[in-house]
Amino acid sequence: MSHSTRPGEIALARPDITDQEIEAVVAVLRSPNLSLGPKVPEFEEDFARLCGTEHAVACNSGTSALHMVVRAMGLGPGDEVITTPFSFVASANCILFERAKPVFVDMDPQYWCLDPARIEAAITPATKAILTVDVFGIIPDMDAIRAIARRHNLRVIEDSCEAAGATRGGAVAGSLGDAGVFGFYPNKQITTGEGGMVVTDDAEIAALCRSIRNQGRAATAGWLAHERLGYNFRLADINCAIGVVQVARLPEILAARARVAALYDARLKDEPRLTQQATPPGSTKSWFVYVVKLADDYPVGARDEIMAGLRAAGIGCNNYFSPIHLQPFYQADLGCRAGDFPICETVANRTIALPFHAFLTEQDVDRVVRTLRSLL
Image (tube, rainbow, N blue to C red; front, side, top):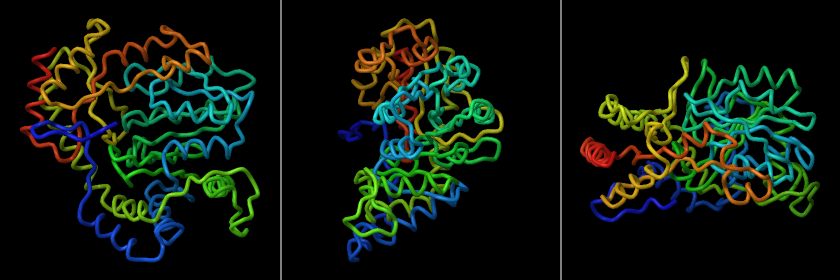
C-alpha cells in the first residue's frame, strides 16, 4: 500500500515519526550494533511490559510473527485452525505456510470480529487451534472464545496486529490467548518501518520463536549450530530503536488518533446512509483505521464507484477488507465460494477506509466528509 501523495491530496495513512525516533536511529547508526544488539531486548522488554506478558519476541513483520507462533505450536498437515475471513490475508496464510488448513467462521455483524457463537459448529477432530483477529483495534469476546478452547483442548492465537493498546475487560490486546501477535507497518499505531512481535506467557513458545527467527539456532549454541529449521526473521536494532520510542509515545499517539476519530464521528453521527463497527461494552478501541460501511440497500459495486470519486477528488481511501475466502488461490485450493460467509461479504462489499492519521486537521476531515456525502 502506497501512502505517497501529490500536493493538495489527503493521504490515507501516514506514520507518526518525530525527532525522537530520528535521533534514536542515528544513535544506533553511530554504534557498532546495527543488528543483534541491545535495542532488540530493550524493545522486547518494553513491549512485554505494555502487554503485561512474560515474554516478547521481536521479528521482521506481523506475518512472520504469526508464522512463528503457528510453527512453535506444532500445527501442521492434517490440522485445522478456525479463523475469520474478514482480515488481512496473512492471518490465514500463516496457517497454510505450515500446511495446516484454515477453517473460516463468519463474523459478528456488530463488532466485525470472529463470532464465538459460530465456532463450535466448525470444530472437528482435526481442529487444533482458534486464531482470532482484533479487527480494526477491537478485541473480540475472548472470554467466550477461551471457554470454547478449554472445552475442546484448543490453542488460542490472538492476532493483535491492528490493536496495540486496545483493552477489553481490563486486559490488554495480545495478552488474551496462548500467544499474541503484532505488526509494525507504517500505517499501524506503533511502527518500526517494518516489524512484528510475539507476546506470550508460555516460555516454550517464546524460546521456539527466538530460535525460529534466528535460523533455528539454540540460545546457547554457536553461530553455525542449527538445531531446527528456522528463518531469518530478525528485526534490526535500527528498527527496534524506533520501536522503543514509539512504545514510550503510545499514549500520545493513541490520543492523537482518537482525536481524529472524534472529528469524523461528530460529522457523521447523523448520516443514515453510513454505519460503523461497534465497540463492545467494557472495551477501549485502539484506532487503526477509520472505516465506514454503506447501508445494506446499496448495491454491490456502489462502494467502488464512491471510492473512485474520492480518489478523483484527491482523497485517499481503500476497501477494508477483501474477504480472504474470495481471494483467487483460496477459492482454487480450498474450494471457497461467494456466499459461504454472508455477513463478512455483506460488510466487505460496502466498507470504505477514509484518510486516517494523527496529522489530519479539522479542515481535512471537513473536506473528506463533504466529498463523501456528495458521492453517497
